[in-house]
Amino acid sequence: VHCLAALAPVAALTGEAERARRLAAQAVADARRFRLRRILVMTLVRAAETAVLTADQETARDLVRELLCTLADIGTQRWVADAIELAAVILERAGQPQPAARLLGACGAIHSSLGEPAGGLRGLAETVDASHDRLAELLGAKALAEQEALGAGLSTDQAIPYALEWLET
Image (tube, rainbow, N blue to C red; front, side, top):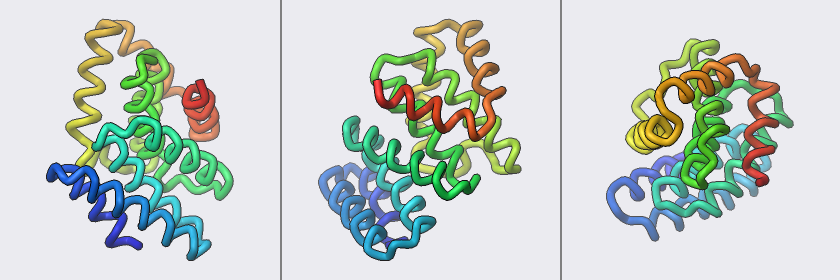
């Protein structure tokens, strides 16, 4: 499961979109059979990254909703920032800049509170940076900074339902 999940975004980054989607779908199906929710969470993150990287907005939205609900249910902090970041990219692409900017602020604060580096070495970094740049163009630097500051003030327990609310619209 780990290998399939890890290979899916790599395939997406190398231009093999259809292969990436198949790998991600297989990883999620296999993870569900294990009935170990933390493995499912990791797999949903990688599958959602793959959907974002292959511009499959509907699948990305569905996977991130499931991911956020699972994270809220098990109460773990691990993967929350990644899930919030994915939600932000999805919302930015869907023309919802204000909640996207707020969620990027929440993501940064969650990473910081957990002592995690922002962005890391993930293949999604360029995509996140591009979303941030588009948000700066749409909102302007001042409004973007204001929304990110509001997001940074959200706790994890506030950020998850906020993201879910906006992913439902």
